[in-house]
Length: 561
Image (cartoon, rainbow, N blue to C red; front, side, top):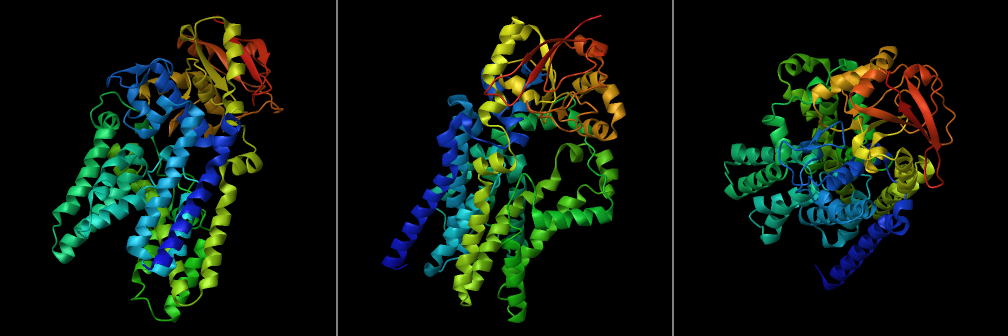
């Protein structure tokens, strides 16, 4: 690389890092007044970290329970104490921990993709704009926050593995392999990545006769480290006698036509937990480049691009077929196929989509379409900018801010009104997420967790059995999934965030209040008024409003008869 090219690339690199920091800057500037994703974020993970840290059971034994949730939620439900995001929440206030995690993830996503492209896909010294531009776009994708580097760290891992495979690795590649398990999740990305890398080693063995012990050792090293980091998950999955609610998961419902439609939808639009925002710019680029390759008869020369395009769709097809009825016989016999989501091989798609984006852009650049190439990359970055959390959740979804969602001052007023130690009674929520009460230190009978005992699910179901009987969708949702162990109400459906300006009123509630009381339930926090409260042995004590809260909380007490 010439001195001038090197200087230019460094300048582009610094500008790219600055753009990423600007992208996350609203989190630093607004703090708790920032708008964040609610689904699988505010409604769950952030509250989980707070409950775990406050419980004093960060390093609790395998049989430890967290008494604040469902009268004793097993410690393993909150994951490993060796996860980097858990330590961020242990050291810093929740909002700052979230902000730092977002920054760390996006910066290392950019660095990882840049290193991978520079080393293996876009090596030309003069094409630095492509590798940096694509890396910026990849780093700005709206990834699932608590996934950390589970998907966005895959380019960094692939760079390290391929360097080791080629015999060109140094200490930094081995450090990358060794450190990533502490800031990623094996079930949210790296199980599937390691499976794919293992197939690459197997390919070398079968077709090239290469054992490549360093390569297989690196794969083994990362696998072992992930299993050690996630030792609680390993214990809960393979050695725990207590049965998890996950054994009742029923995911195979689709016939073939529906599966094919879902595969196309996933291929075109992507998935909520691994959003790539590739539909408008990147997908048309694929077909433009594919058409040019066919027209120019370069399919052999550009076979990597074609292979990635095929694999891209096959991953979407696999995702869709996992929910097909053809799996029913096996899933009925092997419970692990229900409890572990093998559909998530499609979590490899962000890596494949943006690698293909780089290859396609580089192809156009090489055939002389350079202005179009730069325009496409800039357009993709511009498409991603509105997915900034502050923009997306403030102006598009109109979500509450962090402060408004958890409403600490309002819930402190409720606690002061009740005037009892929070550990002496149990609460549940209607029309708002139980994570809000949990975040504020209340002991809840309801929860949203990936693992909890099946026996508790049956006890809790008695509370809502009449409401489930009135609504087939809610019954299926709870009985065949059930990770949201909520007080479901037929009149509310699957909406759990009625804000204080809502006009909704529940008029036909049918709770089993005796079952609620027997579990220790004494109070209900409802986001909407209950018109027939007395019929359910509920007494309205007070309505709580606060200017910094998104909710109007109707506090009901359960009267034991």
